[in-house]
Length: 293
Image (cartoon, rainbow, N blue to C red; front, side, top):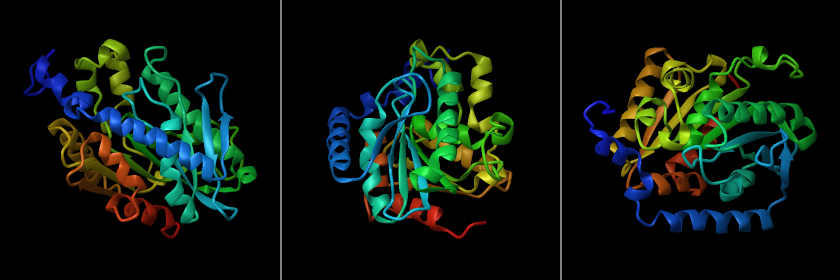
């Protein structure tokens, strides 16, 4: 099933991030090590359950002060790998800046279809919205960030009609629930994923692609601005995905900032979120701390 200018082998190569970065395992091991260190040194509520499955859990790192803004982070892994425990290391810099962090877990393929995975993220955010007053966060200031598949899921969550989905949510629920989104190495058009080797596990069909491709569904304006970032050394398809999505958002007059993280590949791009001098960390910090619109 060729796609655009690619034959099957070429398309598969565009989305095979592990093959493009032979030492990817060292990055994953580093995430796990730094995350374990973060959990040892920060206050954290571990494994808060938003559903019955063991993967329907989130970890919450409170800020030093109550009523803090919140960054909810969604991990990558092509919807089929990794875990929230790999990404606790995104919390320390934000907590030090007075921002609480929630790291979301979710069920994975092939046990779950993409529709159920997206539903998990919405369930986690609805749970967070309900529980933030007791956890010490401000539910009027929830921001999202995600990497790779997590970037896709963050963009999908930004499209949600929250009052229609969860009419039982308390308080003055905004249409967007989240105030801003950062997608790192995100995937916004699922058609090439459906046509690639990844679909052997994901089993995407055409209706699911149509329903869950952010390219086809703009975020609610109330979801706030989007910050899109891609590593300069990532594949041409990742750059195309970001450029096309940014153009679609701009055409609809939706606030969006797109950046290239020079010299970074798929696995080092997300590390910029945990580096104090990186433009990505600074951009997300500005987004979260900007005055309310």
